[in-house]
Length: 330
Image (cartoon, rainbow, N blue to C red; front, top):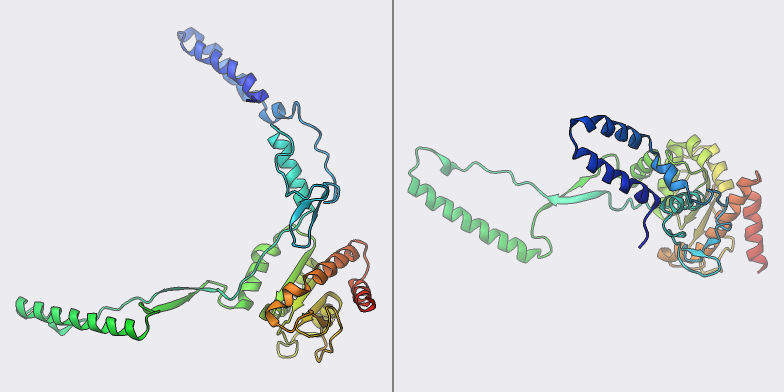
C-alpha cells in the first residue's frame, strides 16, 4: 500500500488540531494559527515534489504511439493500447502526459442526420360525449360509458390485428435546429467544430452526407475554408449545380476534396465526372454501402498527405495528384 506525500504531512497536523480543539478557550489562538498555516499549504506544490519534469514529445511518434489500419491507437513497439497510469502514484503527471498526447491525437465527431427526430405517442384529444349531460340519470350514463369502453376495446383489438407492429398511434417530433441533415450539419459545425481548438479538420461524407457538406460550405464558406484541411466523399450524391454552389466553392473543392465512387475498377482508378467540382476515383467496389469501408486506406493516406502539405505550406492538390499517380503506377 502506498501513501502520498500529502497524506504523510497532513495526517499529523489533523491529529494536532484534534488535540488542541479538546483544550479550553485559551487554545483558540493556536487553533487559528494552525488553520492559517493549513490555508497556505499548496497541495499542487506538494504533489510536484517527487514529480518528473513535464517535458513531453511533440508528436505521436515521440510518445511511441501510432494509429493502426483500423484507426486504433497502439504502442509502436508492444502493440498495446494506450496506458494512462504510465507512472505509479503520479496521477497529476499521468494526466499532463495524457493531455499532451491528446493535443497530437485525433478527435472524432460522427454525424448521423438520418435520426433527427424522436417518435412519441400521439396525444389523444378527449371528445365531449353527449352522455355527459348533467340532467341525464346516473344509471343511463354508466350504461353508455360501458358500451363506449367495449366499442373502444374492440376497435383497438382490430387496429392491433390489422397492424400488429403499431399498437399506438405515433408522431414524429423533430429535434430543434436539426430538422434535416443540412440543418444538423450546420448545427454541429457552429456548436462543436467551429468552437474547437483543432487546427486541422477532416471530413468523411458518405452519400447524402456529401450534399449536406456542400450545403454547409454554402452557408459557412469562409469558416470551412479556414479550418478544414481535406474532405473525402464516398459515393456522394451532391450536385453543385442544383445546390447552386458558387465558383469559389467549386474551386476549393477541386483542390481539397476527392470523391471515392462505386465502381468495378481497381481502387483509386480515375473516374470521369460530369460535374466541375472534386476529382472522382474508384472506391474499389460497385456496392454503394461499402464505398467508405473499401476506400479507407486511400482516404487516410489522402488525409495524411494533405496534413503534411498544409504543415509545409504546399498545395494539397499537388500531393493528391502524386498520390493517385502512385496507385496508377502500381
